[in-house]
Length: 221
Image 1 (cartoon, rainbow, N blue to C red):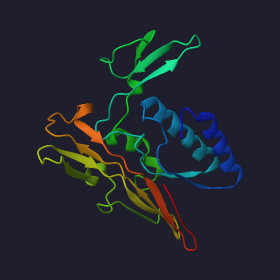
Image 2 (cartoon, rainbow, N blue to C red):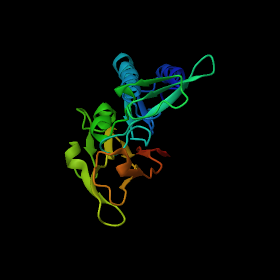
Image 3 (tube, rainbow, N blue to C red):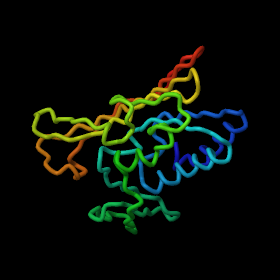
Image 4 (cartoon, one colour):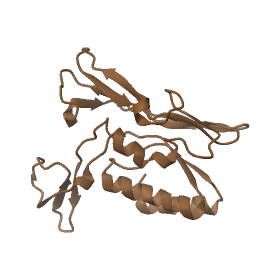
């Protein structure tokens, strides 16, 4: 939704304001690859519209917004005006290849649940004052440590603790929003270091938000 489509996103938000809409659903993938700089800029934009126009955003975690618990490195090559390209990466071990320049920046790193969900926290992932109801699959405790579960590799030897960021919220009377975290991060066979990027393989499923109102029911995702 954000990054390459930055100008379109701002135009969309302006149109939402003109139409008098007050509650906006973001059905996953707010960012293109969860880079820290992109996440910060995207949430700053939404927060600005929330502050100035009273918009409220409710989101679900897309597979482009985070990666497992600890996150992973991201690398991209950007095209220069002369046809060459520059490598920008969070990984110091990433070779420059045929890029004319290599830039290493922590801002390219894609965060995991521990950083991405707090960054998106204002969008329904945590209980908010004024909500008529809020719960997650584990009950009413919105702390991330209370929303953890164990996932095991197919061979039964590699175990990891993962977080389910799903939630159900009633922000206004009669409107229920169910945000389903459909990301699945399954451990690979025999990997011992949970912080290694390669220690986890991802099998994302379509995420989305289901909503039900008194007279209207709809689904996106």
